[in-house]
Length: 144
Image 1: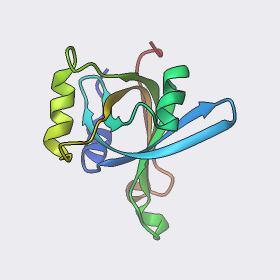
Image 2: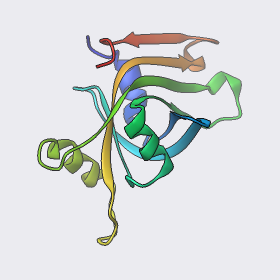
Image 3: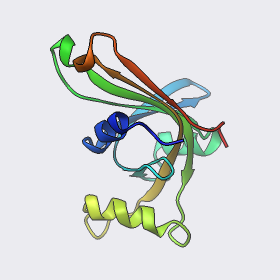
């Protein structure tokens, strides 16, 4: 099932998301740059395997994320909430996604990072520019 154009367009116009993970001590979030591949649909980002959120994602791969437009005007609020399952990408098997990410964001040569993808199964868009409280929901397959 294809993601509606208005949701894909909003996601493609932005580059930072906040990912939320669960840990034994409660929720934790982190901000990451991302690229979006609607074929998955996958949100691809990079982060050290040794970061707290990465360690928790490896234990519990079901995550949530959000992307939003910054505004102080309630009539201009736009954003998406995402639920899905995260996986670490393999340089051998998923190099296309990694290359797309590297094409968008440059790294100093000495930075060691891992690449991850959130495979979305639920996306809810709020868009007050289309009418106050306007919501559009995309529901994909069950979490796998």
